Amino acid sequence: MAMAAQQSGLRKVSAMPDDLPIKIVVMGLGYIGLPSAALMARSGGEVLGVDVQTQIVDIINAGAVHIEEADLADLVRAMVRTGRLRAAVQPEPADVFVVAVPTPLMGNNEPDLSHVRAAATAIAPHLRAGNLVLLESTVPVGATEGLRDDLARLRPDLGFAGGGQGAADISIAHCPERVLPGRILAELVANDRCIGGVTPRCARRALAFYRRFVRGACVTTSARVAEMVKLAENSFRDVNIAFANELSMVAERLGIDIWEVVRLANRHPRVNILQPGPGVGGHCIAIDPWFLAHTAPDLTPLIQAARGVNHAKTAHVIARASRLIMSAPPGPVALLGLAFKPDVGDFRESPALAVATALAGRFGSRIQIVEPYAATLPTALADCGAALVDLDTALQACSTMILLVDHAAFQAVPLSERGAKTIYDTRGIWGDKIMIERALDRHLRRGAGALRALDSQNG
Image (cartoon, rainbow, N blue to C red):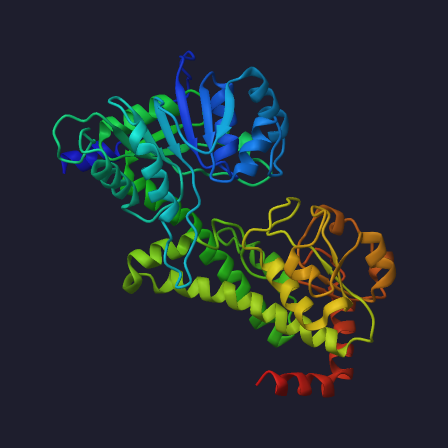
């Protein structure tokens, strides 16, 4: 009981210590690993970023970046020029090893930790007494201890904290990120961090490291608590989005404007319903709830149901959009947006991309896609004959428009440019709902015969 209290004790830190020379290896140079590596280099560290893709390594060593993120290109370029940031395909000896590799889902929604295990295998030969190993990847509860155990098997000559070998040579901790795409650099510095050690001493050592570049409060706890905190945060958001998406489908069946319902319900002082959409995207909210469900499938019916609702909402949008296109006059149809959230070029787990792929597969060259943050279409869309066009072209050529992402550019389109069009707005950004819904209903009634034929084909 005393140990639990000690591990869960809160320790808030606001000051940053003086920079000290330190060698850092960051395993994985994706959306979290590369920004983190650049910030660690800016704080005075000598940072080696490691990635299995030689193309990524070459890009970074040339002072460029392979992902779109505000201010990242300038920071990476500056850090490479100073010599404090470089990239390679294999790690080297260091003081701190940061594991920020992907943890995707397998086909049965089971967490795939193969990249974490591969990172452990890669860094094990380079470990030495006094090292700190930090797992930043989002993982199921218990995975940080699993990483420790993997490293202990690979390096039986070293002692690992909490591993029962006696003297602890290597400290292990988990510190998940909490960032918003488009603001990753700023939030890696400003946001609070939850730092979980496999022992209290590990947490304290990790705390000293993160204080080098994090200005938000750093709170120490156990590794298992830190793991569950990240999963709980994203599962909470997923469940609340599922409620909004479920309400939207009920409102649609009843002929009620869901946006007005949400707006008026949120006038209650203790109600805050989120905005519905075409599903849930992004690498975190669409993935992390399954990590909890996998850990305790019999105790997580709500979390699993939310995942089902949000997945079903995407299928619902595909079905409704398909019926609309079938009933519309022949001609091009505009799909507005592919990203998983507004004003970023991140398409990971995007429901908009899933909708566009399904519609392009069915309607081919009729589909014209507007995505301000894409230079080319994904192969699956291009192979179906869909075209990437600019917003002006779509507004001129398409009498039917399906809005999937609330990019600022779409929000700025005035009624005068879209008032005569049939529009399916999955984001509720265009306020003239009555006229739009009446136009949609007219098209649906006019195409009733085609709809019955389509439904018959689909069983």
